[in-house]
Image 1 (tube, rainbow, N blue to C red):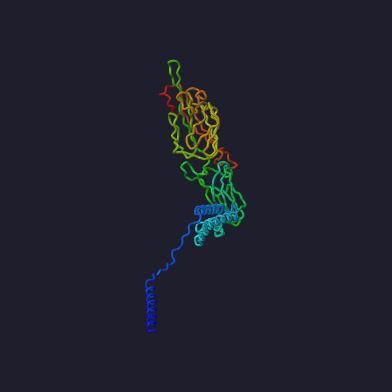
Image 2 (cartoon, rainbow, N blue to C red):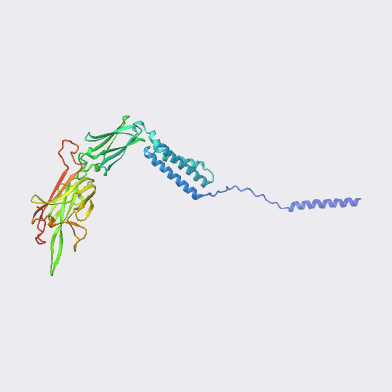
Length: 415
């Protein structure tokens, strides 16, 4: 019996020892801690997001441009364009981020509203006594009118153009979409150039606008726009030499003259010089963009020997019909070659220059006067019904001509 107990105790002791050993050698497997780094989301479609964002801001800018028209396109149109732009920006944000970034989106929408709707908001916030604008004062050469816009929140406006406090023109218009476009014909109020040849101010033309709610605004018309009357002109001449060979003999003779003219404003001391020259240069000229006609006449002893085709000037563009080359044109901001009766397409000539052949005007040696006759469409005194002014300005340029003399004697001295 005692042996069995000893055996049982021994077995129990061995079992307990095995458990202790097992506990000691069992490895401890560490538990992996959850990652704390955020997962990054790749944009689902970055190219489309960028394109939508660009398209949205383009729409916003267009809305701003429409709003700047003073309501001309209508508030509903501007709001529609604004909504389209904001919608594109929202969609681009979704594609780029995967989820809405409310802060970024809010800033974008605020900027969009500011750009597109800002002009309307500004008009509302401007005090009632300052909500008037006089803008875009310009000149239309096609219709010969001074044009300008009046903008504001009133119903109608009356505009006047005055010179030295004398009202020369007036008109009243009803505003449409908070603006009205006025057109004032030059013939209705022009009363002399605003500047002289040195660009010194002579006359100040003032636009004044009064609204039906008694707001008033005024502005001066840019002086250069009101320089319309050509007061000065001049001429210069040069010989056209033609060489001919007959058998063994070669001879050179004067076949005519190239005549040029200069028109606009320049000093009273400018004059002709020997050898067919003139003291005037392009640098000393104040060209005039205006409407007038010009013709050149050659006279000897008071008798007209030749008259050129009439040249019509609109702005700075001169046009005429040549008897040898058809429709021709040139610019009046410098020396302008005048029409002739022949082309220098002979040997030694340029082939593209018109000149007046001597047979068309030359009547032997003597003093020849080259008159430049300017007929202005707009001239000083034209608004005065009692004025006898015709706007015609004539310059005389005279030289001694002797085409049969030797080259040394053909000095074309002033006479």
